[in-house]
Length: 274
Ligand code: ADP
Ligand code: MG
Image (cartoon, rainbow, N blue to C red; front, side, top):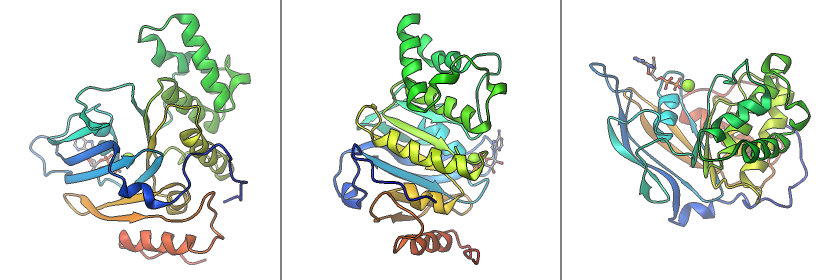
């Protein structure tokens, strides 16, 4: 991971102090989920994000992380439990909670600009205002110059940035990221991790917090203030690890790899050598 200079306009200082303040942004209370007539996927999942906080959820494949994010976005209902945004229950999909899917989801027949405008035109916004907002978001993710290109003309990294610009253009307060860097080459992924972090915490965006699902534990330690570990069958949150390292973070800083090891241990895995 590269060593980036500190960004002066970031709101998060990288301490876990926030966890002790009790104003949650997104909160899951005792969520349970199961498909009809099947054993539950997970039980009693509770988690919280606070203002200016980046949380991560890790766990083995098939444990229910993508389903959990869809429930947090209210795209599917939980079997029981509640999702609260700023203390108020959410029961319908809300523009205030944006989701970037695990697979790169751009529409091939639409230009980058139209892909981003899509979420805006569903509302009351005029075409002109939607174009302006979409252009601003594409600029923010560094894609203004390719707004008229189609996804097939773009790299995977660019398409993923279009998907992120689309999620951000609806001015969400929380962004849910389901393995957003997994299809990207390491260099692009690294740049995008830094960009995402800056976007989440720079003052111009409406974002208050982010929820990342990832299998890459180095990425998780680089980005997250708090990590929830899901495991078991049915799954539950088996551990919660606060990552108290100064930002920007890199693997060479003291303590970084200790946190990576703690997460491997939390998943009952042995860290790879080397
Ligand atoms: P993760 O994102 O942690 O890899 P998912 O949330 O995608 O896991 O899936 C959780 C579990 O639910 C998996 O075991 C998967 O096989 C199961 N599952 C997903 N969709 C369905 C479905 N439509 N019917 C039955 N089981 C499903
Ligand atoms: Mg998944």
